[in-house]
Image (cartoon, rainbow, N blue to C red; front, side):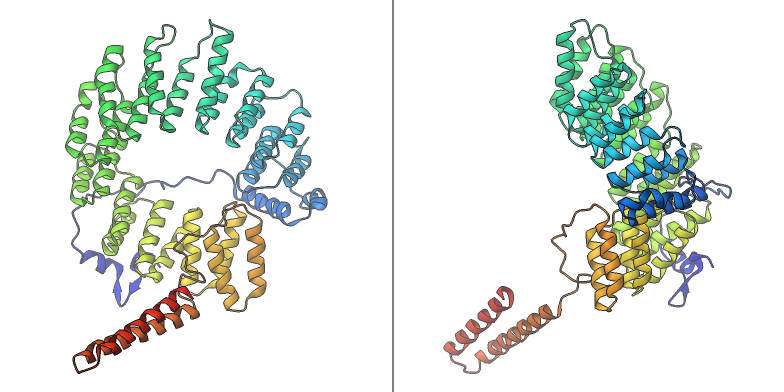
Length: 549
């Protein structure tokens, strides 16, 4: 049974949607369109074996891991190891057991194991594995450098590069340091190399990485200084990628005017022709800021540069209109792009779904979703997330459940946000066993559930007397790393409802307020002023006891 024909209070979803006034949106007919969500990168057998190996590594004791892995009868392969490492957060002991089980029978295992050990911050074990398999390969050193940078150990990353003594890894080192917020350490290391060898000069790739790192960490003065230095450099010339990096960084920093200056003045002076990479960020930043006249004027200039607007250009415009709540403007852009032969993608329609979800327009959103599916578009994970969120907030739990079921039936894997939403939805439907199974599935897939989701589900299971399942839930939560902080808006047990004690306090306060109102009404009937003052004092005392007690 199709979700879109499900009844709700005796009416079909189609009839509800068709009765809602909705701006005309052109929908191309694409019956043979391929799904937009990514296809599985591994076979079902590999995923099944990876799940088995992960279960053994997380549930068995360290002393029994090797024997338990051998008892599975699974033959290790590079695809299997990659699936295991990328789908779970393993301890150092479990990772070493995985290495011993696969070493000698699986080529290319060392970089994968070194990366996993670095992820677990077990760098001594990572070096042991690396040095026990000569000759050491560059991918292993590259993985170690990136993990040191991510662990906020820039000095160790630099020493690893120097030990590897491989020039090909220099850009990897600088890129890792800049991406993880260590641009100052990377800058100091380059300055030191220049001091030791005055004839040495960084490559243009290195300059591009520094520009990206400075702009990403919002060090705009450093980026401008490096930009001026690059203009004076004689041995290195900026490329279109350099200009694109600078323009994109400025646009992300909400400075499209400076980006336009670089595009129209400095690129022309350098004799470099603009392309979509340099022009699209400007359109995106102007549309994001609600400057639609300037954004559309920038698009009109594309033919002067010898380029044409692409799907990214139009998606930026539609995103800007949707952010400002202008569905009619988004519809005009949609019609224009289809007229020019550019078909919208699922991402295009996700911007509209996000708008309807934000404004609580359930009928319009479901109308869009229905027409989207009917036109041959396959909703992706974000589409389902927005639709389910919109339905849950509108208390359409039955439809939300059907959308989630359809999502699973089409093989769209859930992430942290979607999985958490499903657990909360099942709890609201009072289907706690299914909620527990979904929670367990998230942990098995390597997704660390939110602590708030765990607290809510544990409270519900304890309230129903399911102590054994609540203990299993606690063990599952203990096997993953996550923040134990709760949001300030969290009011305690369950779905945020008031506890029994708070309900009693509220009842006392309501009685006190009723007493105060009755005294006010009686004041005109001859009640002495002193009695009214005494009653008011009594109400204030009760109020203080309610909130201070």
